[in-house]
Length: 57
Image 1 (cartoon, rainbow, N blue to C red):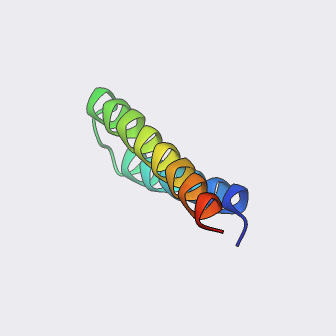
Image 2 (image 1 turned 30 degrees about the vertical axis):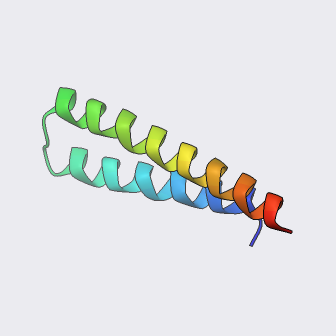
């Protein structure tokens, strides 16, 4: 699977999880902080694995 498609799918999954927690009534500030951390972590890890798999080919 293309790394860009993985990036889009993972970001959509994080957004869906955050929306679900917000819809259930989670406090906004901790949710925003968790969202920032999760988006950053997902994007950095996907990009690092894409670069690593490109360098081994």
